[in-house]
Amino acid sequence: MIRPLDEMPALVMTLLADVETEVVEYKEAKQSYDFDKIGRYFSALSNEANLRNAECGWLLFGITDKREVCGTAYRKEASRPSVGLRKLKKEIADYLNAGMTFEEIYEFDLDGKRVVAFQIPPCEFATPTTWKGVPWSRENESLKEMPRFKLEAIWGQSRPDWSKQISFEANVDDLDPEAVEFACAKFIEKYAANQPAIERLSQEEMLRKMGLIIHGRVTNAALVLLGRPESTAFLSGSAPRITWTLYASDGLPEAYEHFDPPFILQADKVLGKIRNERYRYFNSDVTLFPTLANKYEPEVIRELLHNAIAHQDYRRTGKINVLEYEDRIVFMNEGSFIPGSIEKAIEPGYRPPYYRNRLLSDAMAKTSMIDQNAIGIRNVYEIQKGRMLPLPTYDLSDSNRVIVTIYGKVLDEAYTQLLAAEPNMDLGTVFLLDLVQKGKPISKDQAKMLRKRGLVEGRYPNLIVSSKVAGIIGTHEEYVRQKGLDTSICKELIVKLLKTRPCSRAEIASAIDHALPDGMSEEQKKKHVSYLLQELRKDKRIKPEGSRGSAVWTLSQVD
Image (cartoon, rainbow, N blue to C red; front, side, top):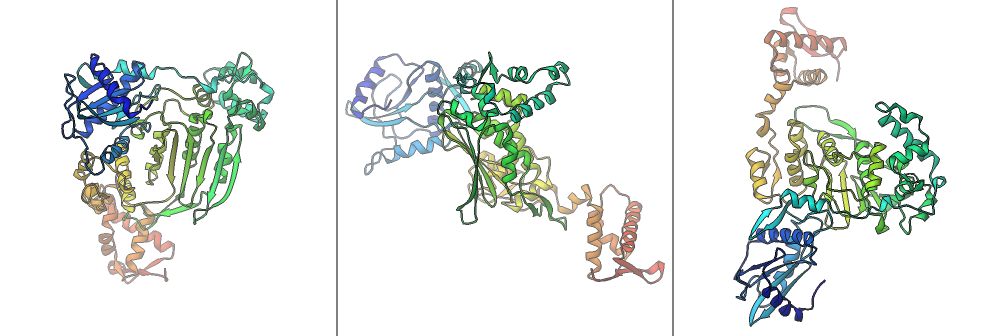
């Protein structure tokens, strides 16, 4: 609750009269105060306020640790007194999770001295407030990274599961028969090998084992996943829907289509609307041929769409949007991002503290729609990394909405070539490089690490991905010697050479030596070049001229 400014002096005097609690912190801050410490205190006081059921936490500037008013000049500007403080709300929010920031910042005089009071909201249910990805807490007079027992206390907080609620007006007949049959088939496919008796269950018994029917009653999860389109009338105002919209090159909508429950059948229908043309791009300087692939990997689209279905906050009555542009697809769903940050979500072994729609998520896991070991998001990142395309971008600026963008084209050729040159690069490093290619900020320490490895160049913070692939692998030639090039590429190199002039076998061998695996002996290289020449001769692309001992090779036709 935001207080009227004229009530603040009395409120602060009340806080001063009390023994300092874990949700109030005093600081002199006579002239300035470390920005990072403010963020840590925000995290700690927000988390403590949640654990102690307090309305909010307070960080007070202009007060000594003996609870005496000393006054502060922190961000005091004579001409526009409150501008600096107002800017702090945005600055602090950039490093907090779940869209958190100060509920209010108050500036007032107390005993003739300036005091600044920061009102800090409690963390959300089951979601600790983090500063730069780390949750903090108060331990007596110190700030500490939040200990495990406090984290578990927050993670274990219960919240109503909308998807588990019974729809008393609906019954099994309101479920779509095709969707029910499909769900049961997927359930059998997943579990029957270890539990053969599952195949003998009736469909209704299987639905009970999935949790979609409880005591013979249909749940909200069942209506979302398996319900007939008209069955959404039983969801008390919630109207689950997926809308696909196609945008033309000028940014105007060109076509759209709505997809209503049963959602278990809709992912492939949405996928069928997306223009997934073949796309050519060069991922290396050492090949004559571009990589040819679909713009989007179908598994990525399904994963992101199923995640949106599982984590949509259906109480907000919004819909899931799939927005298709010429070079990207944007997924939008209602509800906060539970991991708090994408860095946390892609950590190896990460598991979410809770599920917004636990029963719906369980049922989707039992029908192989999602993976409840929380590797789905990381899997999407690994797929894009493997394709040497930009990683998904998560926009979490709205605390009540998740916006994910996947790209179907190369944004920066240097980034793609780096990934091609070092395919085993760890995902954390690739994530940072992806931020650089998109012009997103990274920390100085992260930039220092990337620069040390030769992966970025430029002056911080205006970094670019290094164009010097040789900085990673020594030289292009060394890279090729380690790997070798495909036989078809070696043939093209020979043809390209002969277009310039006739060459002897020895000259050809010397010219393409860089394209042959380094492990080959000289005799093996000689035999391999002879094999390539004979293959090209059989294809009538080249021919020898002169006696066998001194023959030169030329093109047999215009190639």
